[in-house]
Amino acid sequence: MSDLYYPINDFGPLMKGLAIGGLGIVHVFLAQFAIGGGMLMCYFQWLAQSQGNQLARQFTDGFFKFIVLVSFVVGAITGVGMWFISIQVSPRTIGLMVHYFHWLWAIEYTFFFLEIVSGYLFYRYGPRLPDAARMTLLVAYSIAAWFSLFWINGILSWQLTPGRWHETHNVWDGFFNPSFWPSLLFRTITSMTIAALVACLVANVLPRLERRQREELEHRAARFLAPMVLMPVLAVWYFLAIPHVSRSWVLGGSAAMSLFFAVGTGASLLVGSYAIFGLLRQQLYINWATALLLVSLAFAATAGGEFVREGVRKPYTIRRLLYSNSVSRDEVARLRERGCTTDDPFPLQDADRYPTPQLAKGAHVFRNLCSVCHTLDGANGLVHLTGTWSDEQLRLNISKLQLTKPFMPPFAGNAEEVEAIVQWLKWNANGRPAAWDASIDLAALASIDRWLEEAGTQPGLGVLSKDGS
Ligand code: HEC
Image (cartoon, rainbow, N blue to C red; front, side):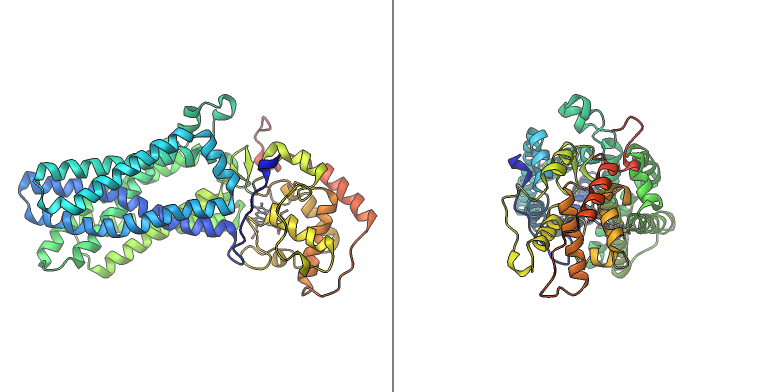
């Protein structure tokens, strides 16, 4: 299987998963801002046209400059950055997403292209154009932006809930998967929310406006917050659509996931309550500091939500197909026989700094099977997690990895490789001495073999549904 191995990058103490997650959050936030921003400007342009509201027109132009700067420039850079990092972290996941949804990516890019072109035309010529032409450009921009969400949403939600696709391999079964609609609607409302909050911020910083005018702009923009009342319903719908086991990670099964979920929900509730009671009912005026705080809360909500969405897929990147460490489900049995380092054509960096070949092999096993979710001693660091464990515990728990924590995939290597990573962990925990004896403990290898056998090659118990899928 030559396509099992790709050169992958090491992001040091910043775990690979975090590197991509961190960038992803910024990108999603900006992209959703661009989508909601488009809708918001259509609304303000409509106000300008239908009521001859000069202020609304002025705002549309001011706000648009903001969108162009922030979302075109930073959004595009982070978007390209997503590809750049994903091919360094999980080329196989991206490879399969491109393989199965080839034409949908092409459609996605077409819409993105339309978004950029109409956006740029508005930016360049908008202030000089008659109202009808302005509206046409803004509507084209908004539709294109929303459809770029539509297409990407199908591909991303397929990763978590492939649904019937596993049986049919039909593109549309994969695309319109069980979490497609709740996720799309939820993101649409999020986009409107972010745009409205940023609009309140922009209303405060636009020059030469009176307080009364800023207030009017805010109250208009705040209408875009009203759909937030639907969010709890959509969240529940989404929650019911995702696998039972993913729900359990959020509800206490994984401390980190539960924490992020709490952050996301808490921040959304704060924004939602302020929006509904403060802005919509009391018609409060908010100054730039409050607006900035609300935008930051919306960012925290996005961050929490995206982390959870990425995290609850564990142990998969594509459910029931590919594990997070890029080993596919049906390859585990073969790698148990063959070893996960044997056929890897990519050498270990600095292999000669390890005193024995066994330790180098341990580092290699870590790189191939664990490093997407763990670092050695940084984020989710293994030395720290196993600090108090005996040799026996290390061997047992790593051999039975998917039973140790069901959000980890089964160990996809042979007994020598388990022993190698155990030795490598011990060597690191002992301060990496220059001399270290190779372990040739045959009794230990025999136990490991037995434990690997007992654990089997299927995912952990909690991950299997009743029909074993
Ligand atoms: C899909 C992501 C993922 C992969 C791949 C993964 N782990 Fe984990 N592992 C986790 C998470 C998340 C935790 C929980 C950390 C915590 O409890 O704070 C964890 C916990 C652990 C623990 C502590 C378990 C306990 O009971 O406290 C050990 C040991 C461990 N992993 C070893 C490994 C080894 C060795 C590999 C590679 C062979 C590996 N993991 C691969 C995600 C992963």
